[in-house]
Length: 53
Image (cartoon, rainbow, N blue to C red):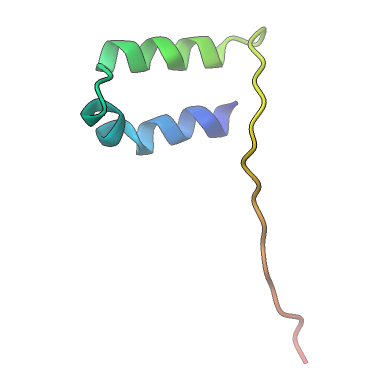
């Protein structure tokens, strides 16, 4: 959840442009910070690396 909250800070300008207010964003962040709140995400992170020769 902390990662999703973190994303709301980076996406703030786009969310504001889409019609959200700073007050609404603060409310979303507060809900997401509540330990009783649960959410699922379809986001997948992957990493590629190379083993040294």
